[in-house]
Length: 149
Image (cartoon, rainbow, N blue to C red; front, side, top):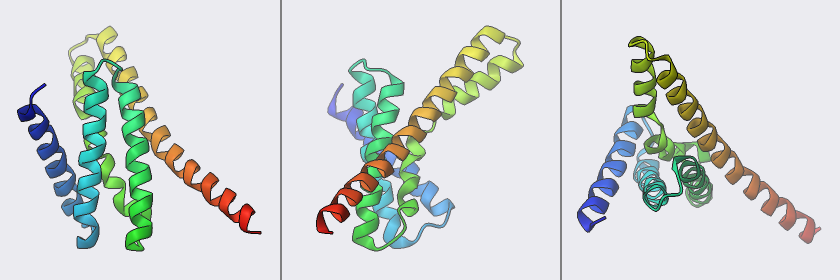
């Protein structure tokens, strides 16, 4: 793992999130931050995967980080946190989904089921990570509210 690889991963995860943000017409004040959040989430995933902890854990922790950063910046920018959810785009298992579909088309049923199961697990990990971030913030806010009363 060299600086070159890190630079490529960071650049393209930023650009992928940025172009997706343009595509869905994100406001300008959310576009750059959302892209940075996507880049940070992808870099976390990439490191976890490269150190051998697997794609499921990597996607879960990266989605958790993306969710927490999205909520933090939603408070700072006074915007809904969903404006920053495009940071999840680099984590979407598009290549695995394509491979699963290709295997189904080519009649490789065992491989297709394996790839489809992996896609479902990754998608579940992303969803669970993002929801966990919201639950953490809700618990912190509830605790603050109870201590003030």
